[in-house]
Image (cartoon, rainbow, N blue to C red; front, top):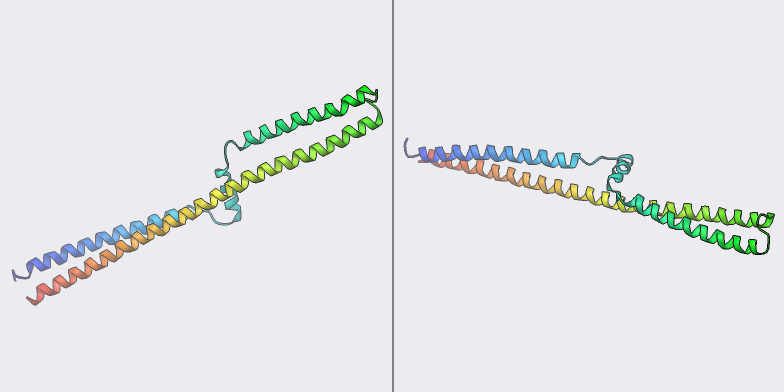
Length: 171
């Protein structure tokens, strides 16, 4: 009986190690599921999450761009008023129409500038969010792969323990 005892002890040790590795693999799969579970699904969830990736300086850039636009608009309005004042037409119907037309065009251009800057910021944030999702999926797949490898190692050690027990019984 004593001759197969070392084989039986090694088989029990291998079986215990296989159980431990199965637990580690299960934990790894749980970690992978948690990583992937943190990714919200659907268009609305995606758009809500995009705001987290927008630059905190975007509003400052927009404000500075619009302030510069407004400054240039005032300069151009003054360049329209100066000739009208020189000929004594300031306040006349034609002068008013000319300034109104300029104001309408300037307002349209200002709105287009603002919309373009907002769209640019959103696209950058959208790209960063998409990259984050891809990174999370890659991490989840890697964690699942590690868990699978640990599970395979546990199965191998379990099989090895079974072989050692069988070897002990034959002696």
